[in-house]
Image (cartoon, rainbow, N blue to C red; front, side, top):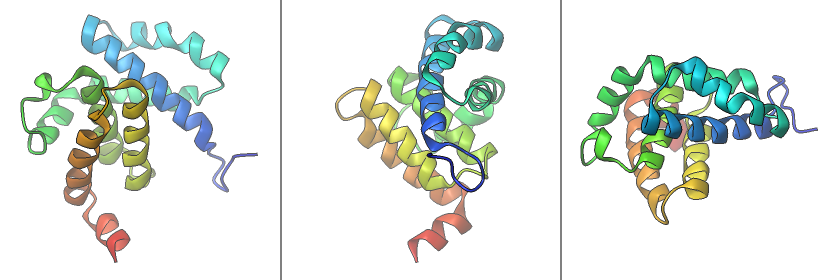
Amino acid sequence: MNRRRDGIDPVHRSRARRRALQAIYAWQMSGGTAEQVIAQFAHEQAHEIADLVYFEDLVRGVMQHRADIDGALAGFVDRGVEEVDPIERAALRIATYELRHRPDVPYRVVINEAIDTTKRFGSEHGHTYVNGVLDHAAAAWRTAEFDAARK
């Protein structure tokens, strides 16, 4: 069994993040409401045994906090957020939501998951860009956790 002591199954969460990346990508390209995007991907979630609640939280969270997320990312990207590759942008938005709104998820988990999903779906070196942006962002947004991990 893969569950941690807190009852969270990291494999199911990883699957939820992969689906969330696909859902946010689709939303970035086509628009739509959170309900429409979630409905489009929820059926696939059930077949893949993913954490559907977490998937929905990520999708709704990114869509609801998009302006805050993009504003926060602006200081860490080398171009406008809308100019970032759509897969990398989706990964950065999801990770930013987690870093800023989900303190229960360790920053290292957030960064590693963003790198893994970008490797899977993004361009050849996209994960390197995502890693650099999120490493700097985590140092700024999760200072105490980041500093404690670096000691």
